[in-house]
Image (cartoon, rainbow, N blue to C red; front, side, top):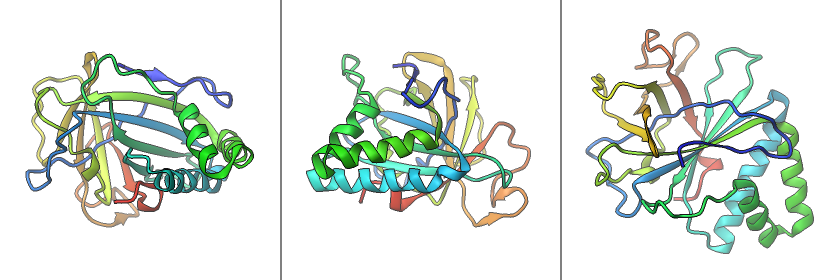
Length: 227
């Protein structure tokens, strides 16, 4: 899967947004998966409560039915008070199996929520999510080195920064992880943690204002899979 734009019943089109994570030597490598699935959801400001409720309910449902999937959820650091929010979720990809079937995240959520809360409540949560959502994009990433596992369960840094690039020869000043879109070596991202509190001007400490095209997200532990 190079890129899949999910045309949901509530949205048309999808804004592509890219994320970063942390892959320092101190972090253990995931022994199973070497791909990341990234879901990006642009949300209307007035719909943030509905989206938070959806993610909290979905994580609780996954835990209750014993779903083994792990997901880290982030929210964009707003550049302006009126700017829409962007939610970004990272989870294990197809674990290197190119023939793995693509799973519609809407269908999966409906199944998981329905098993836990019943079809009526599942439909209510998804309807509210749909009203709050502007667009959704799903994309698969992997490391250029196929034998280098992605520590996708460890991407829970307080802030993460994502820098898109098409260069195959990256020179970056901080530890991080370079990813390429599955099946498309031209689409690449550089993921790295950003330390420090959010500053009113310039974003999280450690991120230069000259980092053109970089998106910053904060980790939402309460919306992520339990560790």
